[in-house]
Length: 215
Ligand code: DX5
Ligand code: ZN
Image (cartoon, rainbow, N blue to C red):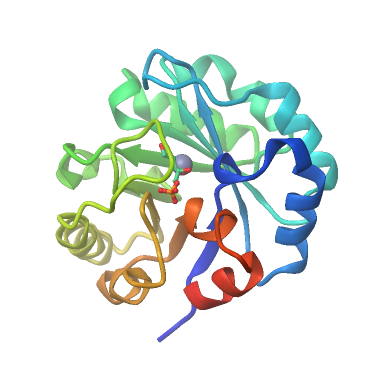
């Protein structure tokens, strides 16, 4: 079994000690930083925005995977490119002209991601899959860390994996929400390439060991 990419979600970090938390991720077996931007409109919660990401990018030594949970994400593509985002993910449910937004993300030199809410069927991506570098499959309802993993995700991952193989696409599958070392292996078996983990990593007594246990 190949090792998944591990992307700790900074949403669960101690914001009063962000430099220390970033250093921990830099020194760990993690591969990316997952940064959750929430606007209080697309999701009920508000997290952090540009100045915090700018500060993180000054210390982070690994790629920044930015997950936008905001309405009209196309308005900010250039801003996040300038902040140093390597992957920029927009929600399918928040994008009226998804294809255009994906092209705009790629034109700025970033990988283009699309996130799907738990209620959204993977089939909606059939006609854009060739243009998507990463699908962020939400395994909780977006807006908060620390929620329980929705088991139907396994079925959705398998469906998406099949669609990717049928189309010969190179899209990566990312799982976001409620990921722990109890479901990681089953998710990778089902076809997941990237595992996001917030609470499981940052609330652990030994975060570096928690990251290792997800590999
Ligand atoms: C939820 C966010 C997730 C969140 C995951 O809306 O997109 O990235 O931080 O947190 P855990 O791993 O605690 O479910
Ligand atoms: Zn996320």
